Length: 541
Image (cartoon, rainbow, N blue to C red; front, side, top):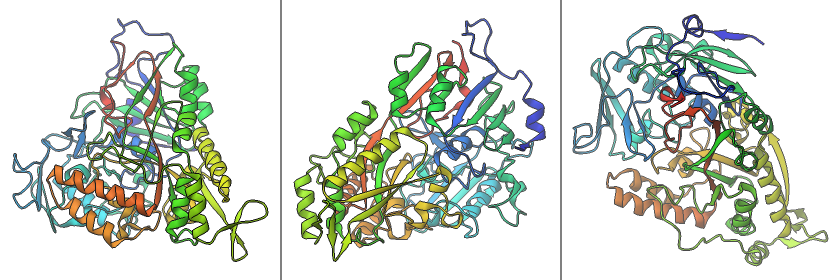
C-alpha cells in the first residue's frame, strides 16, 4: 500500500506539540502524544465537499472548519465566522433574503496562505458547479448571488427567505460541507479527481500528514489553529470496517475512542477499563422503499410492510436499550418534532394482511403471497459490516415472511452503498426494492432532502423517489418562515404526511454509543458531529 504524504504535516508529526501534563496519572496503555480513532468505512476522498458518508464527514472535523457549528444544546456557535448571523446583529436582513457573515481575521490554511471571504465564495461556487459531485445542493440552490465586500465579509443574497440557511450553509447540516481553499483548487480541471482529495489542506485543528489506503489516515496538531493549539499532538484514524475487530481493539487498548454498535456496547458497558457512554443524536435507522419499483408504487403494500414490523420488540432486543422507537425521521426529542399521540403504522399483522388482500396479493401454497402468477418477492440492500445492521435485517426478513412477503438481503460495501450513481452507488441508482439506511441528520429540522420532488437522485437523497405536491407545498412553507413556532407546526404536518404515504419506515433513533480510553477527556458531543471540538480533547485531568 502506498501512503500519500504532506511534507509540512510529516515534519510536525514527531514533535511534542500540546500534549498532557505528565504530572497527571495515566494508565500504562495511554500515549499522551497520540489519539487513536477509527473510521468504520474507507473514505473515497478527503475533500470535505465530496462527502458521501458520515465517516468522511468525521474526518473533515479534524482538518477543516465550518462557518458556524453548534454546541451540545444545539445552540449555534461561530467557527470561521466571528459571530452567528441573526436579525439582532444585522447578519439577517429585515426581509430575510440577505445573510452576512463577518469572518475571523488571522486564520491561515495549513500551507500558510491566509483565509479570506474569497475562499467561502469559491467553495459556494464549487457546490453549485454541476460538474462537482456534491451529495446535494439543497439550500445552496436558494442563493441568487454572492458578493464579498472585503476580505472578511461574505454576503449571500437569497431568492426568498430561507429559514434553515444559517444551520445549513457550511454548517453541520444533513449534507455538511466545509470551506476549502481557493488557491489550491481554482485551476483544477476536475475537482472530483483532483489530488487535493488525497492531500487536503484545511484551516482545522489538525493538519493532514498521510493516507495509507485501507489502513489509516494520520494527522498532526496545527500549532497556529485559530481556536488554540490542540492538546494532543498526533491523531491516527484507523480504517476498520469490522465491528468485532473494533471491539477487540478497544478491549486491548489499541484504540482510544470509537463508535460501537449496540451488541458491542452491551459487551463493553461493564468493562472497568474504559468509559462507555450514550449520547443523544439526530440519527435514524430506517427502511427506504423504492416507490419507482412496482409493486412498491402501491401505498397499500408500503403500509402493510410498515404494519408487519414490530418496532418496539426489534428496538428493545437488538439495541440493548440504546435506541428509542422512531415514528418519523426527526427524533421526538429534537426541538422541532412532537411526540406522536399514536403511530398510524403501529405493529398490526392482521391489518397488514388485510391491506395485502385489498391490494390483490393472496397467499400461495407456501404462504408467500402472489398476484397474477408473480410471487411477492422483494430485495433489501444493506451496508455490510455491522452486526446490529445485519440482525435488524434478518428480523425484518422474519416479520415480512409472517405476512407472506419473501425478502432477500443483499450486502453491499459501505463506500459503494452510499456512493453517487456515477460511481455505482446502490441507493443513488435505486438498485434495490428496499434498503436499510442509517442517517445522521443536521442541526435544523429541514428534511426536504428526503422528501422533495427535486431531491430525487442524482439531485439529493430522496432515495424513495417520493414526489407529492402536498409535501412540496409544506416544505416550501417550512423553509420560508423564520418563526420557529410556525416551523414546529409545519414539521409536525410533514411527519404526519410521511406516516400516511410511507416512502420510508423509521425503525428507531439510536443514541450514540461511545467507548473510550479512561484517560481521555473531551467535550460532550453536539448531537451530530462525533469528533466535535477535537482540538480540545486531552488526556488526564
